[in-house]
Length: 367
Image (cartoon, rainbow, N blue to C red; front, side, top):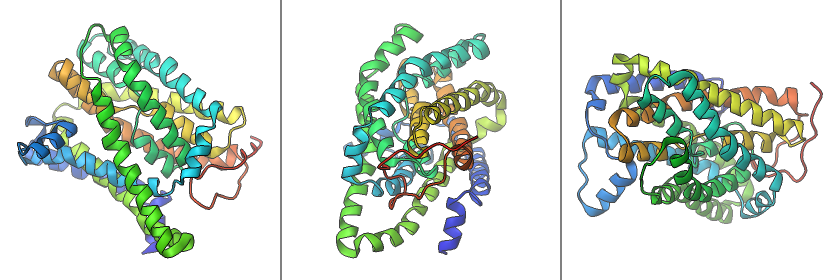
């Protein structure tokens, strides 16, 4: 069982499972016609559950499935992080400045340029793509960093800083790039608590209790099985997301293709630029890949929430299509990063905890 899990985690079997999960999601969405039903945003759904007014329809339950899937994906990565690692990561000004620069001075304008180049004839898809590029991701980039064997502690610190910056800057960027729109800025704070705070708290508690009972060595053995939850959560999330728009993918594939070209160019180009820049200035692999994912991933939860409240259904549809493209593309980037590691960086012994902050940057190898 352990060897089987390791094959999935090191990408020997993962591509097959990803394809099967996407196909299963499309089949479920097509069979039930899920995209014809109104969906409640996950945060609103959770509030409705506490108020006792939530309706457990198939489509709404699938929408909540994204929350469950993201938690399963992030929770194992959070158990790797020690409090002292977060303190070290917070004292990494070079990495923080790189991510802030690319997230707020490059990414939104690069997405705007791509929207003008590919979607200027369709104002709804144009607005959806620009909206998708406004905010950096605050959840899944931690999972991608974890899968790429990057610096998890640094990724969490970067996400926390991006979360604060979003609340201040998203309204400014939205008005600058899309005109006079209004939305609830507290959506950002609620998303931070839901997608980051909950798994982070659960991970810290799990690590503290487990180490106290079985020690570091026992916890490391247990982590092999716990890490498989990330893969299960990833595959479950893919099934849910593709089920939500499965029938649309088959009936109107043109929308997917029109969004896919600029978005793929965005993710691959921005990731490559940041990753190679970090390598060029001498950062180690773990920090380089963490900076690259945190500068590339987009906050599709916020984009969808803003689109639903401030735009028409077609713009909202464009933002919903976004994660269907982003997740497979980012998984390809995880694979590319892992493959490039030995070519760009001298192989060094991994820290005791996967993704833990290295004491000294690894030296770069020759091309």
